[in-house]
Length: 153
Image (cartoon, one colour):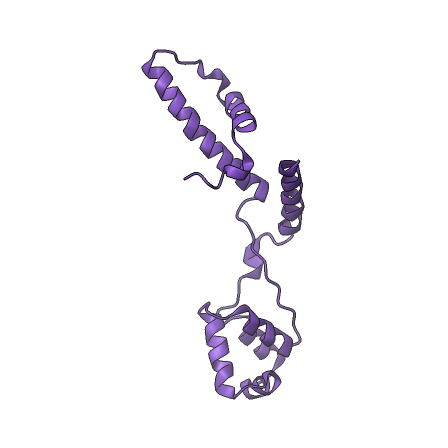
């Protein structure tokens, strides 16, 4: 079953990504990682330029592009290698992936059930509110197809 395989894959990714929390630990220094590490190593811009096989003004340009967020990954990777570092690249979700999928399915279910509830109120056929969460989870399980949750507005 593809849905189950996707759920297990999300859980495995969630476990790996949890190690990156809190992500504030990885925020770049004010002038960027390249400049911070180069300075910490005591390496001049000219020395770094030689290691990169570029001219010194290119180092200033590279560091400025990292600082303002326009550096390309391949350039950052080359700089990391020249500093004897490894570039680590990751997208860290604000919630777990499983949580994001469930929140999206829940929002769609609330929207859909809200329409039904409104229609039933107009027809004086309201249901008691005591079973809201159970009804919502049942709707998500039975009606919301995981592969379609990102298609709807």
